Length: 174
Image (cartoon, rainbow, N blue to C red; front, side, top):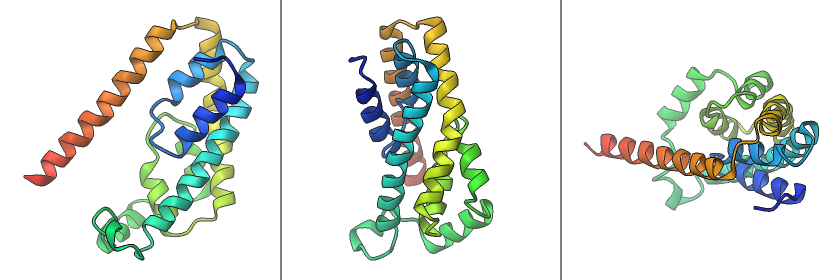
């Protein structure tokens, strides 16, 4: 892995636009080589940009205009239930969701469906990620976790995600 801040930003941009399961190991790794505030600021900006792209892609995919996506898109009832469950994809809710390691996928889907403004969404992601990314970079600097442990953690996270998806799919099939 390179120590370049640009590489970190590229990784976090891609992470922000996809599943985001490598964010923690990435920040711990780059926290060794750069000031935590730099990692927090640059990483949050890159992640927010990737999340904005993902929001636009989700909005496009869930728009109902694509017959091939109807299989994957939630039904109108599920959308309405999600909106009732998460009454608004408000700025504060998005900010708080991004400031924790908890998944924010339900809020992303709701934000895409209700066509939450991309700029406001990106700003919430950026501001929420700042303290979280800073703390992870600080931990990476202070504890210098060996690279092999970070790689193993990333693999375990990916396997956990895959296992959860397979288990959910098997439960839905039965």
